[in-house]
Length: 81
Image (cartoon, rainbow, N blue to C red; front, side):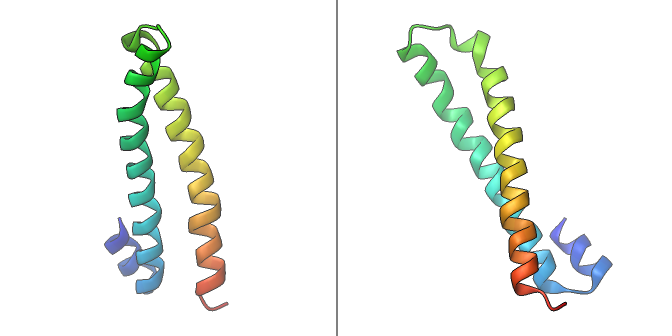
C-alpha cells in the first residue's frame, strides 16, 4: 500500500507514513490478539467466547486513533503544504 501511495501521489514520505500507520495497526492487532485470551482465562471467562468481540473492538478503535493521530498528524507535520 505504501508503494501504491508513493506511485499515486509521487511522494515517498507519504508512502512511508502510510506504511508506518499500517504497521502499527498490525502490531496492535497482534499484541491484543495474543494478550486477550490469557487475560480472559485469568478472569475466569471463556476465551473462545469473548476474544473475537474484544479483539475487533480494540483493533478497530486503535486503528482509528492510530490513523487519526499518526497518519494525519505526521502527514500534516512532515509534508509540505
